[in-house]
Length: 264
Image (cartoon, rainbow, N blue to C red):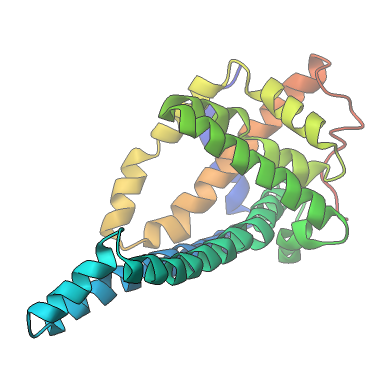
C-alpha cells in the first residue's frame, strides 16, 4: 500500500536530481498544449467577432435583416454561409485533433519515459522524444487515441463514468513508455489492473495539489513551470513504480511485458 506523503517525498527527491531537464520537458508539453488550445479558442473568437463587427457596422434596417438572415437557420443565405463556416470549423477541429494525436500524445509518453529512466540513472533530455522514434510512434498514437476516444465516449453517458475511466486508463502512457510494443488490449488490461482499488486514492492525490494550483494562478504560471508540473509528474512516476510492482507480484502482468526502462 502506498501513501501520498511517501510518494510526494520520493517524487521531489527524484526530480531534484535532474531539475533542469524536468522543467524543460514539462515546459515543452505546456507550450505545445498552449499552442493547440489557443488556436482552438482563437477560432471560436473569430467566429463570434465576425457577427459582432457586422452588427456594429450596420447602418439601416436592411443591414440588420441581412445579419438576421445569417443566424436564421431557415434562410438560404444562412444555410450556404453555415456550410462554409462549418467546413472551416471542421478543418480546424481536425487539425487540432491531429496535433493532439500526433504530437502531444507521443510527447506525453516520451516525458514519462524520461522521468522513469531518471529514477535510476542520469538520462539525456533527448529521451523525451522516445515516442516519436521508429514504428513505435504509430502504435503509441493509436493506443493513446483509443484512450482519449473511450474516455470521451464514457463521458457522453455522464460526467462520473468518464472520470472513472480516465483514472482506469491513467497508467497507459507509462506502460507505453516502458514497452511500446505491448498490444493494445494488454496495455489497457494492465492499466486497469494497476488502477483497481487505486482510483479513489489517486483522485485524492490529485486533489492534494489544489493549494499549489491556486498559488500558481497568482504567479502567472511560474510555480507551475518551475515546480508544480515536474513535481506532479515525478510523484505520478513514483505511483507507477509502486503499481507496476504490484501487478508483477500478483502475476497480473508478466516480466517480459513490463521489462523496465532503458535507452532505445
